[in-house]
Image (cartoon, rainbow, N blue to C red):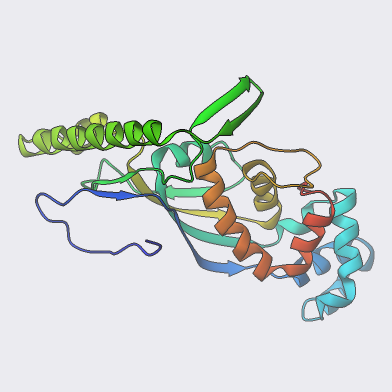
Length: 249
């Protein structure tokens, strides 16, 4: 599922298992032209205002130069806000990126819905190699079935205990302690283009990256969807990001 249904909560909602992530672009003030006028002010002063409504395509070379030489501040005069629904453990990795703004669903103020992450069969299960230099490979059918069965059994027990505590009058902020990090949460995240390029450089594994990254697959699934929006909103900046080896300026 890619859309999240906003419905009233029954007393004992049915447990849902998901293997996907939701990313919706809520609003954006992000255009390649924003980078150009921000950069031009260094040499043109007030005349840089003429670039505000200019066609950015004629200044693609400037954007490439800024990305290549890592003159990053002009890329900060943009903003993209996303709604993300993903497991809590994905959000804990998100929070390491402190050049972004976050507002997340609260387990203190609302009863959390029983939506849990279960990987699909494409998820590689086995880690081989040493710390800092390892790869993931496919698991066997038996390993996958054992993993999924263990996850579902654990999730069902945890949520049953969560509901038992709530029904007994225990506060939500206390009862939530029994819930696993595979529970889905939701948040808004706002980043400028420079911050987003930094995020993408670290949270996607791509051929041709100057500095290869090895992200956890689940946050990479979110990053890939954010990248699609970025490429559409700022095609010249995105092309420069790719050309420079996916390094944030």
